Length: 276
Image 1: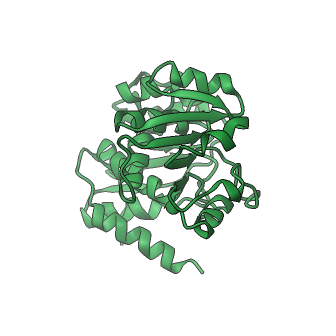
Image 2: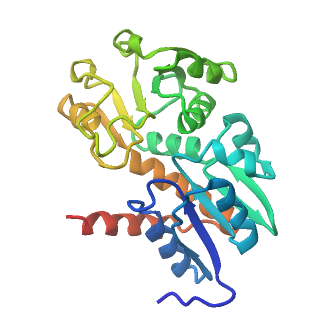
Image 3: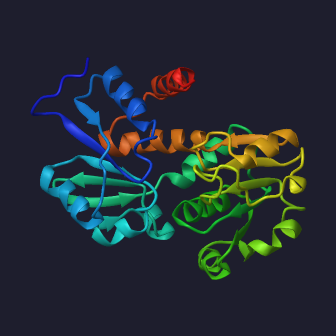
């Protein structure tokens, strides 16, 4: 049983998906296993500026940040680590005695999830989207040696990313052409998320058995893109694996202590087994 007292450090969560997030269980299981006096809780944020000032005023140790606040949060922080500066988005805020620092573990989390299934180096990677998560993934994939192509409805946003890294971009209309040479496909858009789970940017006929398909959408776990990819015998990477690894990476940023990966893995497994 977790004991809350005057010394308990609070880790929070800012984002629209807080009601369906599984991260609370992962972190709290890790805190319990290491006997750390921390607790991880969700916050329903209506005014981001005031919420971030609340981190300072309430002495909250840190927060995880997700859609739709990853980019907007930056303007209210005191500093960014190198990764967040390059990406232009944060998924973690750490409070050091009132000084708020932003970081980003999305890209590294994605790479770790992909590496469980396939090698990235020298592979042709097709990334759909140009938002905060896509930016982080683009940098991490190219750092890992992947040959990256970014497709987005707004081609100018995709170009903004490729100006910073060794990659090229195109509009989403070129999907059928670009996917022919792709070996890894990553959906970093919200297309396919509930309540629009019957949508996919990628027609089933464009998917192949020699393609690794990853979808960052986690609700539902098996999106229409992944259902179609499974039927076409592609290798699958679930968005939940990226969430898991980016959470593991954030743990040390919050606590300064190495994360108990096996404990967090088991907690996630227990959650999934309990869901009907």
